[in-house]
Length: 460
Image (tube, rainbow, N blue to C red; front, side, top):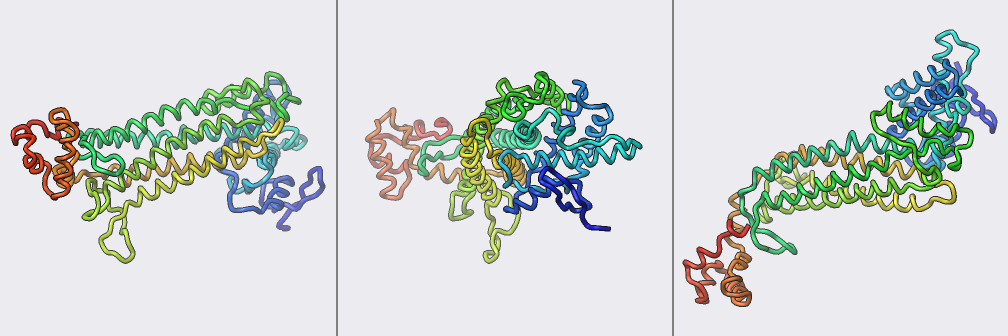
């Protein structure tokens, strides 16, 4: 048997591998865009399958698509959603900026499989066409942004937010466990007044909870769908009810409350919803950078650093230094953050390039958004399981830092004033003595006064 078959499109004949379900337009894209290794994310393909399935149902309901074709298309889409055809979606991210070729890739695979299903039922006189039937009432210009929002909302809901919630839960447990441990605070990387370790960690918890609230709010804008706008936003070749009915059918299929965008002209040429949502991802990433850095600074040492926290020893830290334990989970998470920052810049620039009725940077926008969601979700899950859950407090080290800190002198301000308190701190530092010894040496306070006024537990 030949290892290829001949497919036709409006430009002519194309050789397609015999074992592949795609058609001529997919093959042309595969041949014309041999750029990089980044492929269209499968999350987008599955979102497309939901769009095509819903469109078949709605078009049948509107009397535009026969029952036999509708059944064949929906069954083919279900098979795509069940991962039966993953290897038949080979296209690069770096393709046409509207995502037309990925739209046609889905149309062609679904059409070919639908025709097989019809043949298996003995229906030979009906043929499903990728454009006329699978793409009925649609354009790549409205299906691709629709698939973008479905894919992004689903990934955020199923991967990102659950990982964030688990991390918050662990941080809460550490906040409670360490609530009574008094430690020295630090500002400007220098000693500051005391607080409890639980209070310090409560800051991590509060910022993550705030990020969760912002993400939940921002993802609501992803529920607006461009479908029904077709080519330029006017809805040409589609019924006026197609967009709202599609939103209802996609909502029924996914369980999410998607809605038809109020203005399809905006929906095709602007991606401000994604810019806004990714901005909240950047905010989350910024806070994760802070938490991961705090953990690795506080666990630095163990003998020549701060050493107030102990992190799990997950793997040997060095190929030459035996016994070394490195903060590898912090390092991985902070690298994820750097990538998310870069993705945000790419998305922001790409989204600014909506010319007239269409933005043609859609594939790179959704690729970067889905990557940010994926690596943030994985990064938080890994950091939580392999680092945060095993975090322990080194009480002896913490107590030692508190006892040696000169910033406890702040407690004397209300009694002897800022200038005299500063004199005591400088004397203690200059003579390498304790704060108490320096205070008594100046004669400004008695030992009894010092013991009553400088009490770290009262300062938190």
